[in-house]
Image (tube, one colour):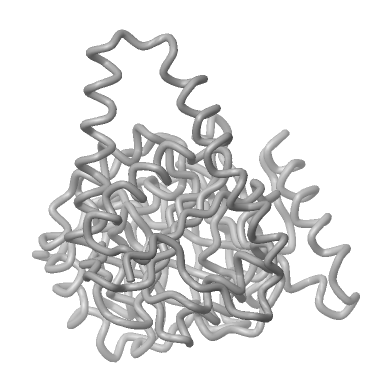
Length: 375
């Protein structure tokens, strides 16, 4: 009774867990020291209040954490302030709360350390504010199978946590996304065009649209991003063909030069766009080298397509929020196993398009980045 840390199963490496736990105070203190020392006292207090307010909203509104629930908060050295704020808000609701600081990953979709993955299997609630996304990892999929509800926050910053998309009325976002459902029904062919040259067509299974990324994650086996607000689906493998011009953002960067992707049978076969295109080829190429030769092409799978549905989200160069901005659409490249696909490659990176027009069969959804539906 009265425990603040949970029992760790016998198979979990205790020394590794202890090492991770020992990092918490020092890392968070370093984050606080480096970020706050130059702030006036009143600004410090204001920031603390904003962090506390957002953390309380996550705990009470988004996750609906109840007394006695096992809660794991996973952060890294870049998100210590947010992890600490979430911890302080969560212990007001439950005494079974554990805060872990893990090493920063190298890219989206990289598996967390084994001790962290083991702990994730023991939770009812997991909050993951980290530099790189844990959404498309085996660890999160296993935690969901074991009954956890999970909110990932890849690339979250203090500004993003306290402003913009996180300030949305998530009950309104939920209603807006739900209103899209009837327009998806029985429509199989998606066509995306833009004035910049996007011309892409692919098939979907209309029953597989995901309409629960709305910020309300209050039941077992639910998964959401925060800030939330998108409707998305996995393109049917092997069906996408055409040219895709990414003009908004890619991963954690606003684009000053468009990225052009040539796609054949669901696979990116060419990337153009100067330095950033070269960096993309290098990053995906390095991941491909770690795979068996017959699987290497799969890193270039077009894994996900979706619409932004959050009216408070901003286009600021972090795809976590950019892809939620109302009227944008996005495509992700890489791992699609979280959506039921066969591309298990350990990398998943989205690019956001602004100003696109989208049709489902003969029904138009977006016109130049504006919804033509009454949602």
